[in-house]
Image (cartoon, rainbow, N blue to C red):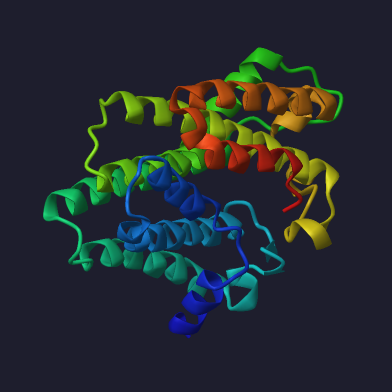
Length: 271
């Protein structure tokens, strides 16, 4: 049953956004994208494991994921917990078994993956223990935006940063290099944009198109950019973030066209 649950979750119809981001980053840096095959698979396994756990009744309690029943609805809660754990272990196995990667690169990738997992767990705690929103309730907007930024840097942004940083590590670039620092500035902005557009999708789409339960955050009273700013201002924020992303990529010139297009695509996302 565990193998079936792992296969069911890993083969679901996701966007593969993070692995595509990593490949585009590698291409921009002039790297051989074939070298990222294992890393991109590890990214997807890690991401799916977090989604399985995120959907659990003890966390977000969502019944749908990527247009299909969540792992704990398709199987059961105990199997879902173990499935997430198993896929997480497999993400490390994929990296460590790739003989084409130098040991030093493997160590750096595994180290970054562990830091990201820790950040995601911390973000989940911030999320489930954070403030809730009641219609008509007056809460300090700036305080809520600080809370959202902190939560989403951990829960969403860390994995997006990993996608970019992993490509740079495999390419042998130093984290302190000008290119990597510029890319991390870009990926940090992209992480916020991803979450803002996800919140907008949650508040304005439908379950059939989005492939997940929409309005679930509102029903639970969870704080989102849409609930704090309202949909029009959240859309304005997304546009401002896109401008900032374009500025962060300008140092790379036309080499960054694919990354810019990928980012702009988030503004019109429907799932």
